[in-house]
Amino acid sequence: MEQTSPPAWAWILVVAGFFMMIGLAAHAWTAYVTIDGIDRASHLETASPVALLEDLGVNGPRVPATIDANSRGAYARAVAQYVLDGTGVCLGFALAFAGLFIRINR
Image 1 (tube, helix red, strand yellow):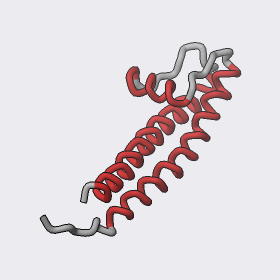
Image 2 (tube, rainbow, N blue to C red):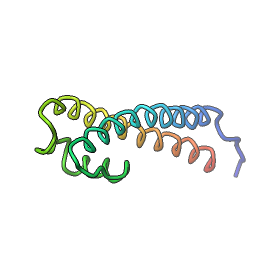
Image 3 (cartoon, helix red, strand yellow):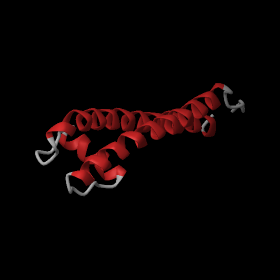
């Protein structure tokens, strides 16, 4: 069997995936801080970032009834942004993993 070198473009997938993960994780953190601030003002406990993303993925983005009426819009926007960014982080991880998989198995 002939030995071939791994394709160089696989590194592009790895680097793009890592940049995607880092950039979107930073953006998701700002949404998480907003969610946490509004939850604290409403005397609610905020789940950890991973548990919150899992809860929102299972139950959908919703605004609890105990959130102040003045903060409901900001809370809804922050939750939606958090879900979008969390999904992007997961896709970036998959992209980086695919690039590494190609490099290792070629």
